[in-house]
Image 1 (cartoon, one colour):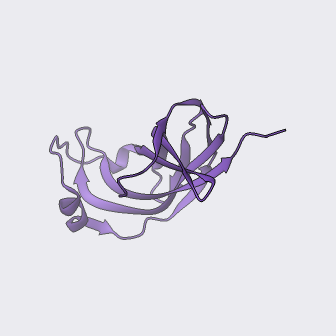
Image 2 (cartoon, rainbow, N blue to C red; image 1 turned 90 degrees about the horizontal axis):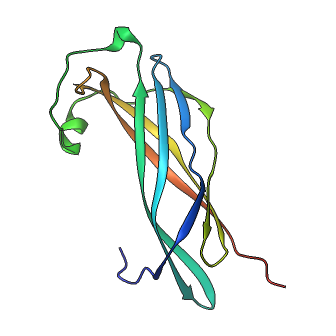
Length: 147
């Protein structure tokens, strides 16, 4: 990560909708990307934006998929070693763009789209199976109109 990401700028959240996917095992997967920090720098007379954020993932399972409850926090390595299904197929139910307005008038659109879902043999504190979900953040920048 570059040490010069630019100057932090504030932004307003217009919308950060849930993205919804239906897994083939009848589980509903919901993800939401939350923008946490936005940076702007001028590079070669052009504005460049960098950002930090977090993806939140929630699963809603069918009762028959419930397993033993487990309150343990697993490392990424432990989850990788416990994968029982490498590629869980899914259908897209809803994918919308997040929208933000930066203090400089720029409109920013982002979407964290799911690219891969894996199922582990681990369960969470409620007995829900633990899935590993990979996402990719797409970014659109619309500078303010100048007259």
